[in-house]
Structure formats: structure tokens, C-alpha cells
Amino acid sequence: IISDARESYISLNEKTQEILKSRPLRVQIPGHIYNQESNTYLNKLIVEDSDIGLNFSFRPDVIDDNIDPELKYALDCFYSSINEKSFSVFLDKGQILAINNRIMLHSRSALKDGYNSIRHIKRILVMKR
Image (cartoon, rainbow, N blue to C red; front, top):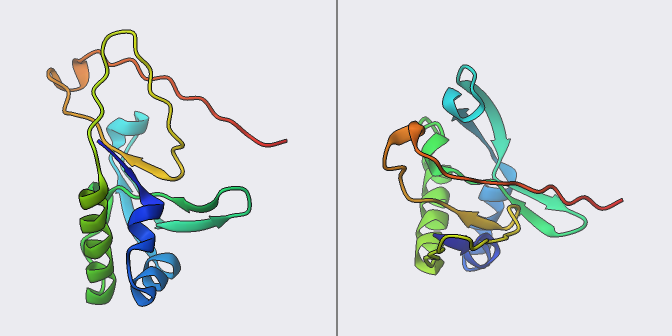
């Protein structure tokens, strides 16, 4: 499932946009993601980048639930907009999908055998010199 975070963001009112851009979120990254203990830190949902504009980092499953009601409402609005604008992509064996991870939000289907499943993911970092 893929969604362009920019489209979702600009569909929100200015006040909601400002709340999302200005307030950091406490997130907890599960240990299995980086093969280490869980780690909690502050993260900004949206960061301005001189090369690509707005850079999004949004994983609703790792956001601490203990947030103020105004920020919770803004996140709910953003998440609702993401869901409205999302679409599914199905890949056949041998196909590849390339996305800009800074602006395209994405999720994957659950692994059939949990973390023992085989899913081949390659990441490429493209940097401007």
C-alpha cells in the first residue's frame, strides 16, 4: 500500500499542518527492526529539506499514545487523509518497485511465517554530492 504524504499533508488545514510540522513525537522502535533492544526517542513527523521540500517520517504503530489531544487530532486527520489517498501495488516475482522513501508512505502485507518468512528487500541510498 502506497500513499503520497505530500498530497495528504496539503489536504489538511493550515493549523493542522503547523501542529504536525512543529511538534516532535515520542516514538518507540521495536527491537526486532534493528536486531537490538527497543529504543524510544523524539522524532519530527515532517522536516523541511532543501532538495525535496517536505520529508515525512510516519509510522503510526510506533507513536507513543501519551500525546496532547490537539496533536492526537492532527495525527488522526493526517492518517485519515493518508488512507483516503492510498492505493495497493501488487508485484509479481521478478518485479521491482522504486519509491522515494522520504515522501511516499508505504506498508507491506503481514509475513505469512512471521519473521521467519523470506522477503527480499534491497534499499538504495541516493545522495546529492
